[in-house]
Image (cartoon, rainbow, N blue to C red; front, side):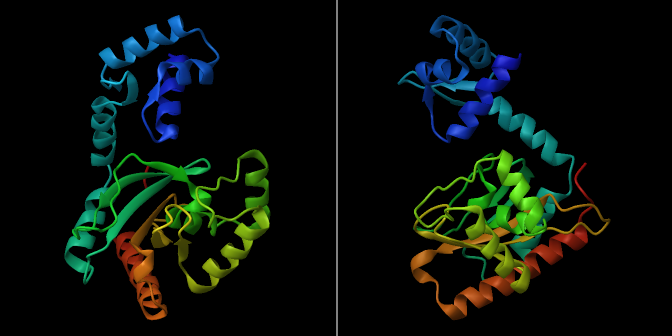
Length: 246
């Protein structure tokens, strides 16, 4: 069971299909042992084996995630507010939950534009690179953030990402001042995003955040200001409608 969970965690973190050798090396086990574990996970629907003999997460995990999300108002309200209350919603929007040093996307509304930004539910990304993650990190004190990244790696997905904790803390100062976070090409080179935490109406420390993503090449000072006000309005509307996740 533990090894099986480790395999699922590794495949999820990899963000791409992985082969049996990668998995065996990650777990430090023989390929024969990895083969047996992979067969069990494939049979149970937790993994899918591709024609090139690589593995990706299976639909059974999606079913379980959907069942979990249906027990919460948050994803449904995310879609309802985005579709009916947010003007000019031609960009992409995501709802994410904090999970250690990462965020996990649990709901996405992709851009309808031909070359627009797209995401998929279940994506896991480092909090320090994403608009949603940085929005949640900004609620921690500088001392808490330093202590947090003493035990977790400070990931960098593109050359635009922060190089050290001091750089991250400078971003936190700006986020707290203006009330929203910015991912300026830190997750994807061509993408610019704004994020804000969902502050639950019934209290509790926020563990969810929303973001809106744009093509980086189209961002102007006027558009960035409008995006910041829009994400704050979106997060506030969602905060007022939902109870905390439990």
